[in-house]
Length: 246
Image (cartoon, rainbow, N blue to C red):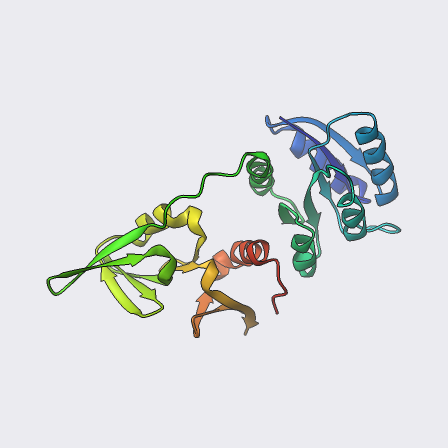
């Protein structure tokens, strides 16, 4: 179970966040702080006194010591707690993940989204999984069978009862559903960006906003992201690449 600290200078938001965290059976204890300086003092006292602190749920826009500056200071601790940002500032996501944040929540916080952040905290605390061998999809080509490795697939498109795999050297049609492929490759960095499109994060070279929509560049092709998937795709790509996305 997790012991966490919630930090926000807006009292109603802090009380709501603490309440939601306390409803989660995976949370053992919730402390609160109403500003960055107090939070830093509390963390020093907790950790210095041998008290376990697993994570900090941290607002960004606070007077004095803001959330990003506080996170940089926390990063200097010998065994720093993990960070989850809870903020109204969507534009700070890149900086947050550069600070190795586990998650980035936008206000107002929904209970199910907060639950997902707690799941990610638990996953981050778990031992790293043993790497698995690259999966291979067999494709029939006029009496021949070609074995298409997962790592070569840039993206996949639903085509009725089939899926078209777009690779670095061509495309191949295989009889399976996109949902089945998503389940098979979800742990290998493949993201659903549209009801009919699954993309390999490793092959995404650019994310941009175009006409109010998110568009990915994958192997020189422009792939639109549905509005439903935009926020999750952006968060996952920033977290994975930890680079500047424009």
